[in-house]
Image 1: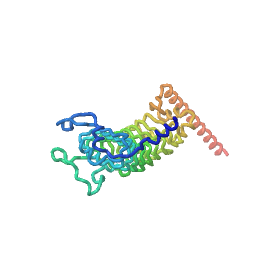
Image 2: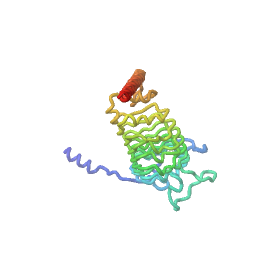
Image 3: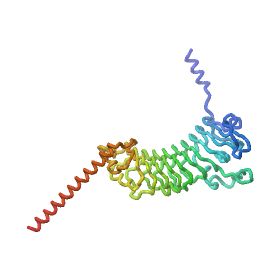
Image 4: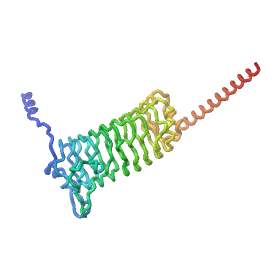
Length: 346
């Protein structure tokens, strides 16, 4: 009897079907009433249509709510997101876990479409609206984007592109305001194209195929680079200019030679380094000590703060090694001189 009931329930279980955004769904998912951008009235400022099995944002529903500031549309099956560009005052957009394959809607006007595109809407006062003029936070993680291309979002501060299929950033033209970039779990081989970002402070680039630090250009405020589980075995002979770099995470990379780390001395403000789970760490008896001998001013090694005792040990060990090397050098000179004298006597 119980078996028959379970079979009936399974047979009647509804199938998940894809749908398009519609006016009723928009109204049901609106929240957070606030003043309009121009202060002339009140409007809904947040739309959350996450997990709605959406395959489309419908036709011209979003522009009717142009004062939206926060749009959550993650965990759907969206491919086309052009209507989001008709929200001139949006500040934060989450489109993670969809099927978006390009950044073109967020790019310069000529990149977004062809001559058949409808004319841009006008703001009060007759001026043409600039898409994403105020956008500050954009999450496009877990999509199908294959390249980091130019962005026309002048106030963007945080960009999340984790778990896409990005192989290149060569067409990226930089960004004046971007501070944090997440691009983990992609297919990048280098940092070529990571340039002209005067405000960039932190890059999360773990789980790619990156082989070195080359490619960074004009990123004067970059402080932290997260490069876990990439392909860095040797560091670049000519390091990029990173005057503010403080932290470098190389955990899980195939680096195996302590001499490679000496190249990091070009970064004068570097005080934190992680080489956990590398051949170098596994094959070196006391990797923390060896790193501190190279970099006595470091404050964090392999994710742990350096103690005063460790620093003193590193200083003493370095001094002892220097003294032993000096003795060996002098002894070698003495033996060479004796050999030369004996040769002259013969």
